[in-house]
Image (tube, rainbow, N blue to C red; front, side):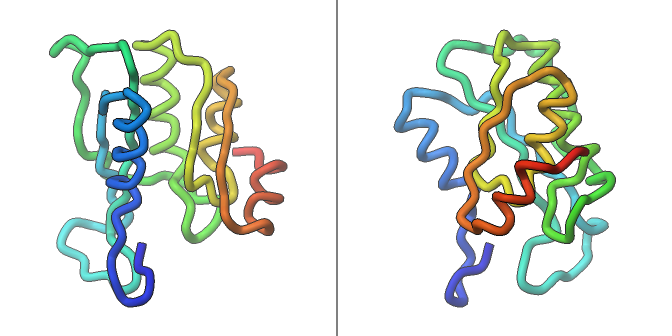
Length: 140
């Protein structure tokens, strides 16, 4: 995100918080918001999907693609696409005992709604009261 003319990598901030809580990065997926090579203004042409764990370690055979080429349907202009969120929910269901997703920048709640659809609990944090209210009712 861009704040006061400077780029702030939210993924980095989340990783710092996870490490401070004793968790390590389990996976980091880059999700293309625009085709590779596209010049964008105001926000990057990609987003991160990240998963952290205190105990789980993945075997090399459990690896998956690092780049997700399409977001999928976006319930709003700044959303993480439904298809990208499904990658995370499927990963959690297949490889972890985790049943709660925490989205620290949940916006209108796409990841939360997709997690619920996969039978996972979801907690979202959002600075905008308007977006937080929409997140409570989103069905993706």
